[in-house]
Image (cartoon, rainbow, N blue to C red; front, side, top):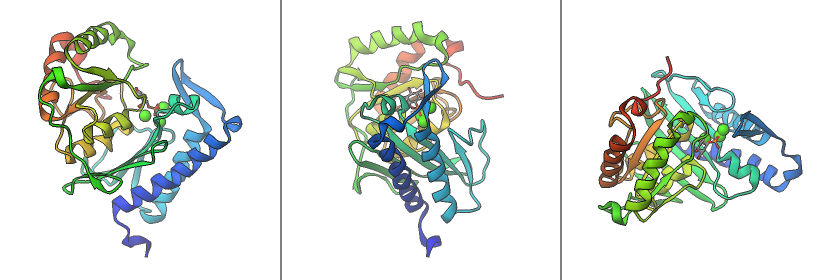
Length: 275
Ligand code: IPD
Ligand code: CA
Ligand code: CA
Ligand code: CA
């Protein structure tokens, strides 16, 4: 019976099981301990226990699959094998402060391509889902990227990275340009949610650096299935491990690419691939 679940159904089920753990700690905040991986990089036992619950759930259905997951399986490479890429809580800083916008993000990759993905934003109850070749959905309804064609009508998303700080001055110049040329910039604090919002046409484009595979592995499939585009800061495809990403509807992706070429020096645009 269990084997009859599709990969997407497995991801969906695992996201809901993971969300139960997150909700438990939301309701029992006095039990939450906040540790630091770095000065700005928080982790709580909710992150760790949510990831355990998600992996345990997937293993029940797919015992032979592999994992790449932020808190326990943070490998720096992907093989051709079926691999579940998991961010148990994307937006831990938001979660730790009780600020809305944190998600479970789960993607299945095989032959280094995304096959299925879900992003579940707990505060809104929005479940974003996609399967390769079958479109992208929000709570079961089809979603598309926006059709905004010009920067002057675009709303952008980004993040304020807390690693790789040598890029900050260039990033701020880039941000000033976007503040002048677009409707504005939003920073919800969860890269997975940002990508889901691009897929749903709420944001016209998104750019960030210092991201990890589990931040983007599901969101990028949503965007591709919703008619959008994704590239790294050189226009290539090294965005999973390369820590630099641009995405959006096709016109705004092209606009972001153009401005990044202008404002970010060539050396700093290169994907930062693990050795
Ligand atoms: C973070 C969020 C944030 C992004 C950071 C990520 P986490 O993930 O996606 O929006 O700016 O770079 O690390 O640590 O909350 O899972
Ligand atoms: Ca983290
Ligand atoms: Ca994350
Ligand atoms: Ca996380």
